[in-house]
Image (cartoon, rainbow, N blue to C red; front, top):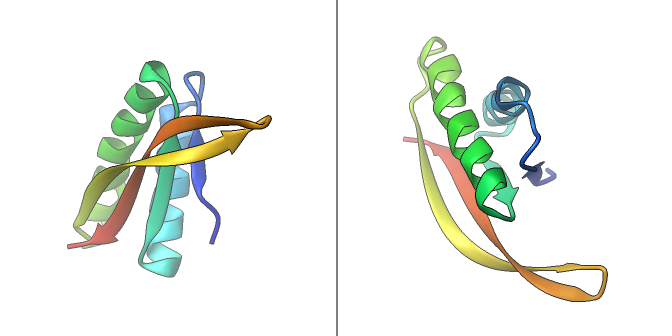
Length: 86
C-alpha cells in the first residue's frame, strides 16, 4: 500500500475519496503532507473521508506523527497521518 501524498493544491474531495477507498480495501491508510497548506488540505480531506466512511458504517481515527522524508537529497520534515477504523 502506498502513502497518499497531499500537496497544498490537492483537491480535498479527491484525496478524501482516495483515503476512503484505501481504508475500505486495506483497513489502514497513511496520508503524508509537507508544509502548512498541504497539512491544511490533508486535514480537510480526512474530515471528508470520515463522512464518506460513516455512510458505510466505518468510524475512523487519525494519529499524526512527524516523519523525515528525503526529497532531492534533502531531508524534510513531514506530517504523516495514520488512519484506521476505530
